[in-house]
Length: 201
Image (cartoon, rainbow, N blue to C red; front, side, top):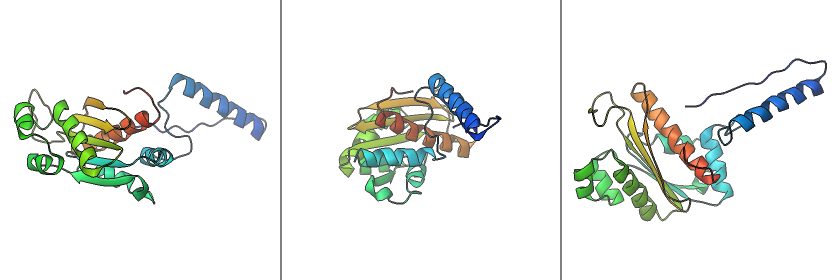
C-alpha cells in the first residue's frame, strides 16, 4: 500500500507558506529516504514507467496470483510499449512450465508458491521475452488454498536481469482483492528501488 500526504501552511504571504511547505517536505525526505516515490501526484506505476523509459530498459512480467494486474497498471499510461515487451499470466503450474520453462520437478519439490519458483519464473520470462528485466509474482490470494506452512496472503516476488536479482517474501493481510493489490504494489516498488539503485526492502 501507500500513504498520500498533502502539506498545507499558514502565513502572511504566499512565499512564506511555500517556504514552510518546502521545509516540511525536506524534513520528510530526510526521515523517509528512498520511500517517497512522487511529489507531483504521479502513481507508482507511472513513476516506474518513466524510470524504465529513461534507462531504455525493457520489461517482461510473469504473474500468477496477480493475474495481469501489474501489466494492467503499467499499460494505463500511454506509450507503455516503449518499455513493456510482454506479460505472462501463468496461473496454473502447467503454464509456468510451458511458457516460462519452470522445471516440473522444482514445482513438485517446493510448490508453486516459493522463492525458488518465483526466481525461476522471473528468469524464464526474461529469457523467453529477450528483455532487460523481468519481474515475477506468485502467491496465495485466497480465500482458500492456504495451509499452515503457506497461509493465504503469502506472496513471493522475484526480479532477474540487468538490474540484478532480487526476491521478496511477503505476507499481506486482507481479502483477495486487497492481497492482489498489495502484491502488485510490492512488485512495482521492487522495480522502482532497483531502478534507483536503492536496497531491497
